[in-house]
Length: 307
Image: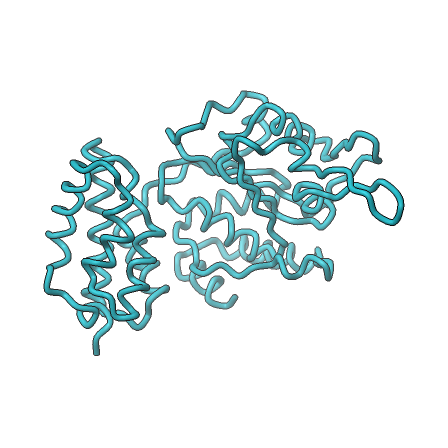
């Protein structure tokens, strides 16, 4: 926890804003049955201006929508915000089968009577949680209809056949969306109007290098810089439409570095985490060429994690 606060202070985040977040934490307690949902993120978020915009909106009771390309830190920011505000988080990933009952809940038979088995949105509303709507632009109309009343000034959820649920004062919702993914669509105007929208900037070399240093403090500086440089090369190629965004996978890069730590050769690790994410043979050759300029074939794990 201290690491997250220290990181924000080092980035120059407004101290008054950080103090308001601490007051928010102190004002709203967390129910015992939801404490296991207050999850410390693996890495801190880097980006002073974006963090200040998001935190200010949440403090004023607004919901936020994080938009942008792949690997811009949308989920990292959402996880950091939920933890720093001291709220249980409910991660809801939208897909083709997600409907209103998946969000609100369904009828179940218990103790010889029909009861509501509450869904993640209901639980988030009651426990003052931060609901993270992942890939919200994949939501079907049935699911979107649930969000309208939940996200606006009424702050209520009407459950057919049951009493309405009033949102806890601390409840907030954070939506994330990528551009151009298969199955996505334009959000309707009514839904977008219920959010404050933040367009996430592309990750920079300095930011990525800081993230990798936090995750792998035992790694060599030169090795991590080459890994960060590789990702930036891929990002530039994707931006210029020379390759797709499939190999632009930050999770894959981090996973590759972890396998290098266990002793796997860097090129083999990068092949698993980055290169093989592309299933087009021509694109794969381009990505392989980019990797060759950064990671020599004869490198061993000692080049990254050696003494």
